[in-house]
Length: 361
Ligand code: GAL
Ligand code: CA
Image (cartoon, rainbow, N blue to C red; front, side):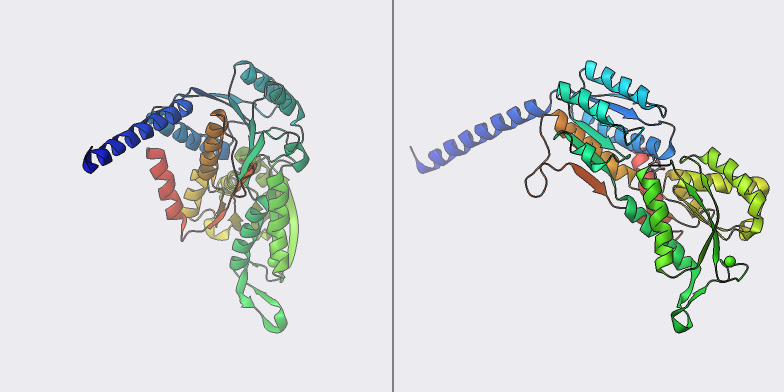
């Protein structure tokens, strides 16, 4: 055989081998995949944006010829109902479960059921305690770093409250636009999410903690627990307003929806925009970003729901295809956390553009 013919023959065989390996790979990956999801409350704004992004990931995979089916349930804030849904998803032979826990302290029943059927579970957004996550090696968590969201919110507020950094003798000078009564203290109200939720606890602690670290004197006038909910926040704000009126200089909210409820209350009471306290949120939901753009919400902290949805889908797909994830050290990576970022009027257009681009796809 001539040298040229031998080379050609070799190339041909190598190509055949490559194609057959690819086919096997595709076959393995292309098996039908069934994902089961249970949401703590499908009417929660952040969660519903999150699911839209998740659907986008599913659609993209399907467009590449993969058969992905998703059954989604709304637990409507009932842990008992969520447990029943998990049972049903397991009976319907889902390959993987994605659970947005109602009660983050009560995952045991779900874990036991999944373990019996050897189906992996990815918890997301509502973080369970470390010990529960280590109950079994096929449990995962996708979320964000709650502490970071509080710190970033505190930094955004500090920047607006402080007048050119430090004053004389290291004492701080407060902006007269915020410290309206000029008493050297910031009178504030805080709106908190569900009691016991990791994000509510950490955000409250680290937002106020960051302000204290900056030596900003604070006086808490009152607080409202509004369960992440816009309407609840609005009605609590109406009550708080009747009590404190224009003494309120700052409103810190654990999420955007409650901050929007506060804005709704001010609209209803008809306080002009210039006479309202500064209001801060967290999430950067579509409605939240628009409120920042319009100057109704002073700033927010972007909770990367789209990034989390992507990570959740990729992990679910991988687990459903029978692969456990490998972290940097080659071990299984059980926890994925996405970073938060600051959003102000200056940069909110970037975030809005990304949202618009994604929703068009
Ligand atoms: C938080 C989010 C809230 C709410 C909550 C539900 O991360 O900031 O708006 O969606 O999750 O668990
Ligand atoms: Ca004051």
